[in-house]
Length: 440
Image (cartoon, rainbow, N blue to C red):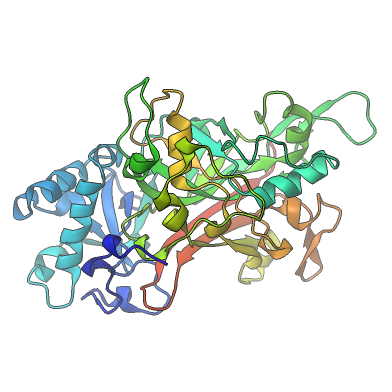
């Protein structure tokens, strides 16, 4: 199901671009997508600036002439000359949507702007990326009831799902300084852990390092401190979505998480994809919010007819593993699991509404994590903690290798996309990160 009022000619699956690579089957970045990132030519001293993906190319917004566009698009293109997307995010979806529409028209087959835009293209293979925004604050939520139940059962067998989960979007404030863009490498974290059967904790490298398959949500226009954002306006405060890996040290987490929640178990690294996909591009993939039978109705400030009918988004997500040995053998990554964001218990609008109900001010460029996305079946688990039953049933990945938790040299790759009959495939690219040995 989709709301036809959200759809326009930019969603037409028959539209084709004069950039040939954008028309190939399986392309993440067709003309119907046009996500934003911050880039420069690799190994150059160029300034980072904003760009838009089309096929295997990038439209360099700093190379465009704003004078050739209408006022909203011109304002967005001028903001795109900056080294982060914050200025464009602050201008709202009306401006970013105008930029998307102008580029859609210029990139169409037969466009009179083809020669102008050809001069603005940079090959993605020749680019390097920075974080899309200067991230002031990072909040990570817990939107998958399936993940919450599975993990809760390991830690609290008699009471896996705490009673507040069905009523309030649970979240914690993370650390923005350790967020990195795809390609991030980081040393295995150290910290306190309590070995099985021990009476006292010890300090050392984590033995139970894990990934968490998530989406990231970039805030667009913020709200004034002391005000709240109602459900009806919540999505207008979202700039777009990316992939997010909230790496987690499970042994540190088990020891430290009570009574105040995660701390050193999660603040050492978070990896996001460089491309931010707008809600406009995702419009064809809106679906009704479906919750498990018996779930209570949300409190009024977290409810709306629109949220019930189309608040969820069917985004396919997968996690892959490339071990050091697989890399040496030049093998393809091993697929660990796949799921969909449509299974989330809380929607994007509900996260925004709840985050601000107490008067908390969000700012352009703030990042929200959805929490680990696990589906209703074991194969849809979004972490090794679930897939390997806490490490007790290691996953076989071939050539005698198995994993209960991540080892040094492991690379985790996330991919995401939307696809359905009658709509163009919309992709997110990849979020990739590698585990290095712990520092002495």
